Length: 498
Figure 1 (tube, rainbow, N blue to C red):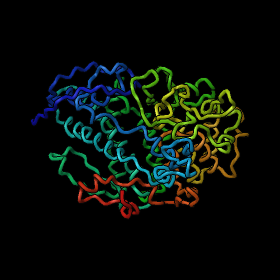
Figure 2: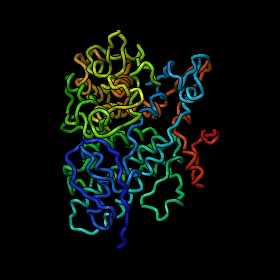
Figure 3: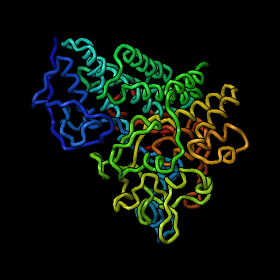
Figure 4: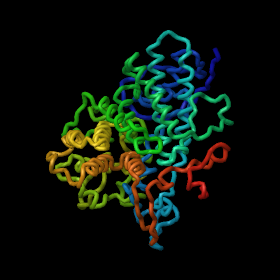
């Protein structure tokens, strides 16, 4: 058997603690990868960041194998309007001229892009593929451990390709998927993968998810696994089918599949309308001991008593920061007085001004730089609202309202009095907007799949983001375009100098 020798790079990077105590692994200076336990150690290079409270488990592959880029709120919040540029900020606004500077115009006209996203996900996928490809034939008799490690890696491969297709693929053009590779390249520096069709990418994502489900049936998840867990994988599948259902890769049964997996993710879980409970879900400074039906995986910023520093997760707390600290009155007014989210998401300062403080970090002097936040992928609220929307799309309005009412029971005292929209679909989408304000990529991806049109006046000129506009998909980084002769840029961005 071919052995892989990897030099360990000891780093001081750390993440968060979200699951039970991790395995006590002690890699040495050189790691020989041939046994199941060796692949577990490779996975621990990522997993220790999710499991150990003190960072004692060192990474095997150094700083390049960390985790997918979960913290993307700063990438999308200006695009959606969740954040607006603070005119006190010299970074984006020229007070002498009374207009946005070049950086501000770029942000406000949807032309800004985070080029680290592409590299971060594909750098993560390399070691993940190494684990999936190698562990099947690895030496060892612990078949449960083999399944745990492979299942965890498969979940994150499916997750990573799903996020890449959401960020980089035009919603209505099947030909513009993303490169997919499933095995580690012998010569990764010369690999030049082509873009796959979106339908083919989804097929691979769903294949990985099904393999995880089969593994869980054979070997149920144990305490040290993180995303190899039914609630997480079923919640992700509901989200995949919901996003896919109106795309170029749509299939007839997508909405029904969204309902099927939402039901599996929701089973045995409930909403409890309690202000203190809802506050605790988003309380970044609190220690990571809180558990609740509303989430499975909860990633907490490390500047506030944890062991990770999620930069660029949250802004909007300083009058002199890059983003306005105050929500618009129009948006704030959409939260009814009996809505638990109103007290959790907003704070009233001593001067009477209302600020957005969803993650309870307004007292952190560095928060305006993007320090803070909580990330809960595929939490119960998302899954429940997906089910309500899917039922509506299939014409099952009575059932859709029942599901929506169940969600509203966890947010309002007066459920019927909370209805303000003229039809049920708009009510469901309104609740998504209220629930996921400044929460990762939720608003942006809803705008993309719902074909939202947006207008902005910037320095006296009207700019329009049209439905299915090319700016809804991030540009392939120029570094990738230069290195890979087989790569095709997204339509629209190929006419722009990046």
